[in-house]
Amino acid sequence: MNLLLLGRGKTGSLVAEVAAERRHQVRVAGAKENANGAALTLASLENVGCVIDFTAPHSILPNIEACVKAGKNMVVGTTGWYKDVDHVRQLVKQHGTGFLYSPNFSVGVSLFLEIARTAAAALQHSSGGQIFERHHVHKKDAPSGTAIALQQMILEASGAALKDLEITSFREGEVVGMHEVVFESAADRIYLCHDAKSRRGFAEGAIRSAEWLAGKTGFYDFKNVWREL
Ligand SMILES: NC(=O)c1ccc[n+]([C@@H]2O[C@H](COP(=O)([O-])OP(=O)(O)OC[C@H]3O[C@@H](n4cnc5c(N)ncnc54)[C@H](OP(=O)(O)O)[C@@H]3O)[C@@H](O)[C@H]2O)c1
Image 1 (cartoon, rainbow, N blue to C red):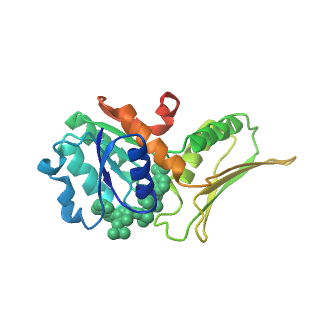
Image 2: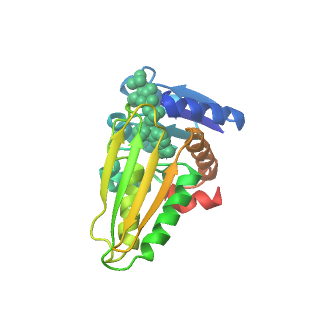
Image 3: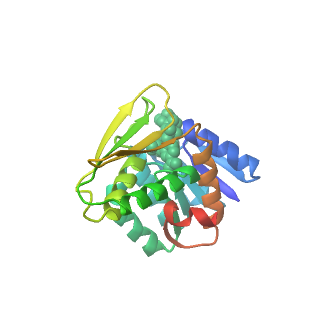
């Protein structure tokens, strides 16, 4: 595929590497090349099969709007924009493009979310819980998109058993991403933990998502498609 990758930061650089390993043609545009949307004109997008975005919360909406309006499929890994998810879903529908997003493209995290959902569904009333998330000091948003997704999923699955699930965020050194869930009852405490050893899982998930999205239209969340990749 011809891929345009937005963002040459910590994760974007690895996405470019995985794209090349999987024999895609990849062009990368960082903040400089994409100043004022310079990389996202109709002409520059002409031969692009899919745009992949790993940039920053302040730039993601203009990037999405330009790509979707140009009729391009998109895979979005950037976090911190989810209050606008309904607006983006509508835009994708209106322009008939394909769009796949996730706060976390790791298959391991997707499995972790399923495990947490199963545990929450089995909780009895009067249980409590907490989420802890740790990331590197450069991360721009808090709590992490993954922690918010985890919180929503657990609260939904627990029915009335959990009233609230507090998220505590830590920013330390170069931690790639660690998420912990603690379920508490009067009798015991259950710990679930996912610890990303590198960014490789995110990059592989994003490239495999772009491959999966080829030729499709519609608005997709990685949590609903990762088993098909
Ligand atoms: N979904 C997932 O699996 C997943 C995994 C990891 C990270 N993330 C998310 O992905 C995003 C990037 O993470 P990261 O760790 O790679 O951050 P990062 O190292 O800070 O990289 C972000 C890069 O985006 C560039 N950028 C900013 N605005 C841009 C624009 N308009 N066009 C093109 N490039 C632009 C920045 O360039 P300058 O430095 O020149 O400003 C920077 O190099 C964050 O939102 C993070 O939360 C998601």
